[in-house]
Picture (tube, rainbow, N blue to C red):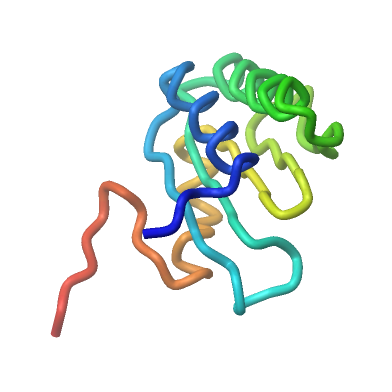
Length: 117
């Protein structure tokens, strides 16, 4: 397996450090031109979602990446961080379940398993 891009690894490490839940990585290469990778994760509250967003942005800036565009703050139900080749979606669990981005991209959430018919 190829090593993950530095921006992706920095975002995932930041999320893991603050105990983000159900971290999903979706490889978008060849599927869309908006980004190469999408990260989806949950925080238990709006406070945690905001803290996760701050930590991801800081991690990306600390590694020398351009400051990403951030949307969804201060509500922090769903925060989008656009770091160019990496897009990070941070949700409260019920908002994540409602939008179900993993299903849209044809992947399973970490706690769901696809059943074969």
